[in-house]
Image (cartoon, rainbow, N blue to C red; front, side):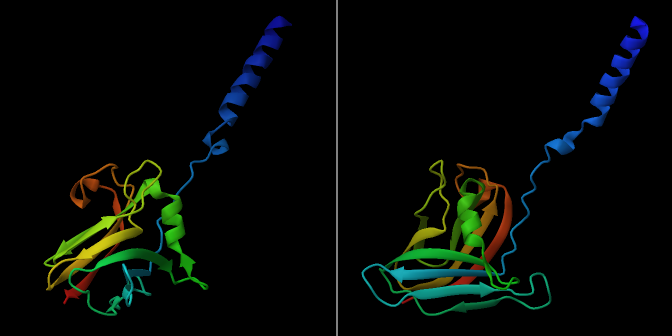
Length: 182
């Protein structure tokens, strides 16, 4: 009788062990954000007309190129407070992806790359660990010049980092704007 009880207990334990799997604790999957539109608004410190930079690509990887607009030129010596807004306009109403990026700030970072333009851009908001996030920034325009400003959003970059070159991670969006400082 003890052998039968032992055998029954052994089989029952084996059944319990084999029926348990990892589905009780599924791994959360963080799907990549769909970003169709990036808008940078540059507001001059001390007043003046804001400048809007926008790229909109409603067909994603489709055949149509993004529509890129710049509403005006930068003024030499001016300092601008900048904000970045990301949208998914494939949904109606459009989804504000900026909120998700800011909620997951430790997993995101904007990088600013300037080519030929006498300007500097610096993040003014940080993640919870004090590392740059970059949805808000300051742009300082130097002397008259022409060139480019590129905004690159990296998902899961190494933090801290010394810039885009060593950040790693995956690019969620990269947008380049031709600018003039006058």
